[in-house]
Amino acid sequence: MQSRRGCEFVDLFGCVPEPLRPYLPSFRHALVNLGQIEDQELSGQTRLRAFLRALKYNRRPDLRQRIDILLAEAPVLEEADLVLILDYLDDGPVGVGDTLMREALQRLVPEQTERIMQKWTQTYFDQGKAEGRTEGGAKMLVRLIEKRFGAVSPQLRQRIFSADVATLEAWVERLLDAPDLQSVFESN
Image (cartoon, rainbow, N blue to C red; front, side, top):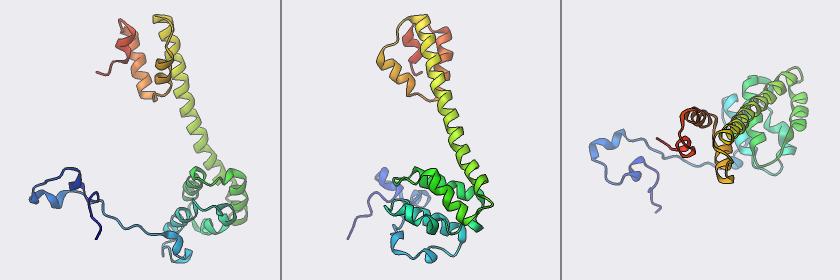
């Protein structure tokens, strides 16, 4: 018999008083091999079936050949759901590419293809803008530090360029009044 250790929140803490146990969240779940379930039996709900198909086919080496099967629900799905599925497939381990997705959408929902592709590529544009903002903020911070305190070490440069926008903004704020470089990066 397998141990249930690690499936319950209580396992993280050890001994928990009995009266509190019903209020702790449970992480128990059943694992299902979607590959063994026929596509039409995945769910009676169209939207859920489309998402389950994406889960089922995303890691398969023959994904590119099965793209029409995977997107079979496209004519009845909302465009936002199709964009989510395209994002999921594109982030997966099997390269699909925008050309293949465009061709599949053209076959399945020709009147919606351009709108869906535009919405899908917009997410990449927005992501690129955010990444550009982070990189620009990091470059600006390095320039300000160099102007005020001199050369920036490679280790500090790496730390700056791996930070998120909120952290960069906090460091810039501290830089304005910092008596020394160490004060900028102290976490207090």
